Image (cartoon, rainbow, N blue to C red; front, side):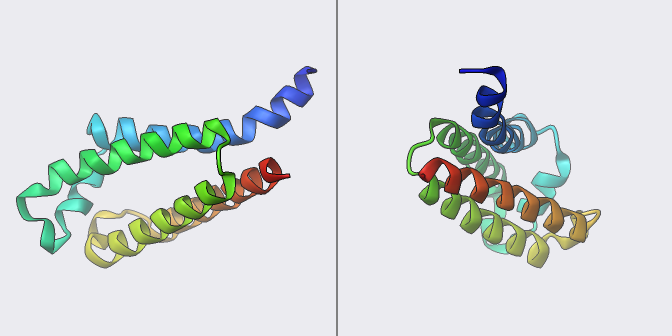
Length: 126
């Protein structure tokens, strides 16, 4: 396999996976982004469990990044990514909007991530 073919095959899913792994591991599990915790703490039903919920979300995001890298059930993976990001964005904006510095920027970045995730899924499904 040539370098260009290798890059075309692995760079797009690697980029999607890298976002999920960073957001899960660094931002949530390792707590490098205090705004993430503040957003989760803003959800009224979580109470004192916000820290645990944040770590569980982070671990799920890391697992999702791994799933993307495997190439297994790519359309299902893209659908799960879509559902999670829609839920995370809706919840974050509804409950923790005051902790999100640039809400439009957040949504735009996530739309771009989902476009790439679906391009990866549709290409791998062929």
